[in-house]
Amino acid sequence: MLRILAALCLLAAPAAAKELHVLTGAGMTSAVRALAADFGKETGIDVSVVGDTSAGVRRRMEAGEKYDLVIGPTAMMDALSGEHLVAVQHHALARMVAGLALKKGQPMPDLSTAAAFRDLLRNASSIAYVDPAQGGITGVFFLAQADRLGVGEHVRARAVLQASGGAVADAVADGAAQCGVTLVSEMLPNKDVSVWPLPDAVQMTTIYAAALAADAQNALDAARLLDTLSGEKGRDTARAAGLQPVSPLNR
Image (cartoon, rainbow, N blue to C red):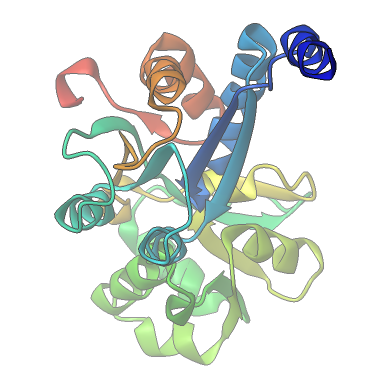
């Protein structure tokens, strides 16, 4: 009788809520979380989203952390595929857009040309950006562009290094840095700064892509979320977050 009662209790118990675990590069975090929240409401699936630098995403995967869907720069995704940690098939989602931040209320700077951006950096007393040693690709990109413009030494001498793009915006908002340069999508959430994209001549071309984890525990729902991310709603959310959506031909 006790066994029968136990079996009946198990049958009557509600099914465990489905879970979906997503790991994303920091620049896509706000867009992915926004879509994941809507996806969770529509499906009843508990979606958790972890954001990290590109190097951090790779370290987490190589350390054996478990995720169903992984998002990051295409070069990093290729590397993870080579290590058999994510599926070979990737889906391009959005292009990174680097930008400049000033404290709210400051007039819009001249960012019409690369030369104008160079002059702005040359006149800046302090510049916040992501420390390349932390594994964020935007810091590496920014220094490369500063070197190309001939102001690399000036930028390094006036650096206010930060661990993340969000911290770059915080440094500008708090007055620790006169200006900040990193991904627009990481600075936009800070309402105490104004953000503008860099000139096209010094803009990033890096694409964020997504793939199912090789050992995904919930591959079916991960694929459903990926469809949303790569569809019209995903493109609109990416654009609102300060990213440049990719065309279907690039996906």
